[in-house]
Structure formats: C-alpha cells, structure tokens
Image 1 (tube, rainbow, N blue to C red):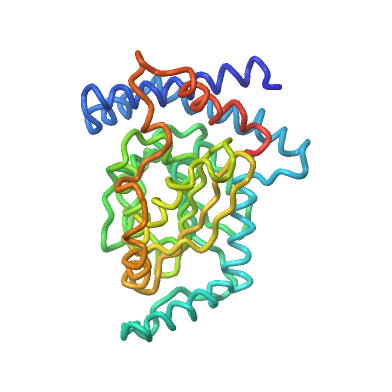
Image 2: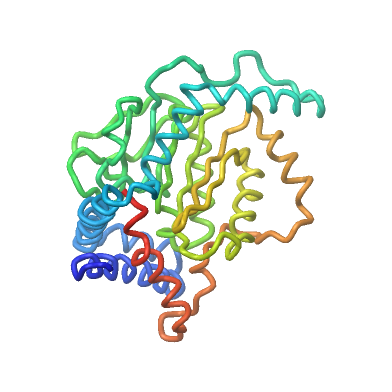
Length: 320
C-alpha cells in the first residue's frame, strides 16, 4: 500500500498533468506549454516530487520485489543485447533484404559501428539521471525541471537541432544539439507529460534527427490495464513512427508499463513500406494517449479519474 508521502507526490504529479492538459484546451498548446515552462516554482516542486517517487518509493520497492523489471534496467538490458551482443546486425540484414526487394540503394558505410563501446545516450525528461550508474553509457540527461545538478535544463520540444557540433552553456542549459550524434534516445514517462498529439510526434521527430542511423529510441509509458486494453493506441504509435523512418523492434507489456524500442532504419523508405502495407488498418491519425479522451476538468468522470490515478498510484513496484 502506498504511503502518505508517496500519495502526496503522485497526487501532485497528476494535478500538474491535468492542469497542463486543461490549460492547453483553453489557451492553446503552445501558450500553455510556454507558461508551464516559465513557472519555475511549479517546476521545482514537480522535479522534487518525481525525484522523491523514483528514489524513495519506486527504487525501494524494486529492491524488495525481485520479480518486476524496472524501466531503467529494461533499457540497459536491451542495449546490451542490441549493441554488445550485436543483435543490430540481424535487423541490418533484414532491412538490406527489404531494400533489395524494393530496389532501394543503401549507401556504403551507412549504419553505426558494432564495436563494443560506450553508447551515447540522450535521456529526455531525465529528472535525476538514473542511467549514470551504467558505465556502458555516455549519458546526456536533460529535463525542463532538473531535480539534481548535472541534469541539463532543456525544452526538448523547442530544441534547435544543428548540423555541426553545439556547445553546452555554463548555466547548464541546453538549447541546441547536433543531429545524428546519439546511439540511444530514451523517452521514459515523457509522452504522457506532453499535452498534445502534435508535441508527442514532434518529440519523436526530434529523436529521429538526433539518432545515428541504426540508433534506437526507447518509449516507456505507464498503463495498468491488461495488455489488450490500449492495443489500438500502441499500434497507432507504431504506424505513425513507421511513417517517420522508425521500425519497432521490441515490445513488452509489463504489469504496469508498455516498453518499446524503435530502430532508425537504414532508410526511412524501409519502415514507410511497412506503413503503406498497413495503412488500411484501424489506426488513430494522431499520436494520442488514453488521457486525450478525457473530458475537461469540470466534467471529468470517475472512470477517467481512476484511469489517471493508475499512472502513478499503481506503479511504485515497477519503476526504479
């Protein structure tokens, strides 16, 4: 059972998410997001609440319960398989075979090295830099509300992506990053924070630009319902990201989490071919999440409240 401290932090997080969605409907997404990012006091409270949940509740419960897999460990385990054990070669071969079928020329030298090396990892919405404990990662942690020093302040939605190397400012704030400079991008508990489908898709497009060819994007999102409850949403994400050049190569539904890995294909035409073959299926046309189907704050139903509550009240045993 969740403690009073745990419930207080999770209730604050849910309130911030709901307020941001409500404000987006009233004043528009861009204005609401700008206002949210400028509210330093609220962001500090949000960062403290997330940090408290992660280290004092999710972390402790994960140590006690050996069976559940934490989101951080799940990312690390798959990166070991993909890069160190060189499973990426399997996907490279598969994509080259598809390219041959559609007479697509893949440039010589396209693709990342499989040499056992440190992976450059961009952790978006990092909060407290949980990946720093792994020596196999060269981590750049960013967040609009860093909880600790060493995490760079950055609005990923309004990030400038440049052709050449960019600098990190002395005040630990990042406004630009170089394209194709990361092996891994992580969105862990990020997309449900963003109040609109357009922002979520933009975040994924930014990740695509920042990833090297054959790099991977992790999307981890909470869902306490059974595996089939939000199947249409998960399939729609796969379809929309295929149109952007991503191929989903791993999906696992844990008790309270959807864990997905999307690979930046050797050519966007490879994943786009999959999207074309499946375009007649019943997908959402936008990058929606379950909360998008909620009504405004004044007319929220009890079932919708329960749905929102499950995001942070039922998850402590499964997060690190």
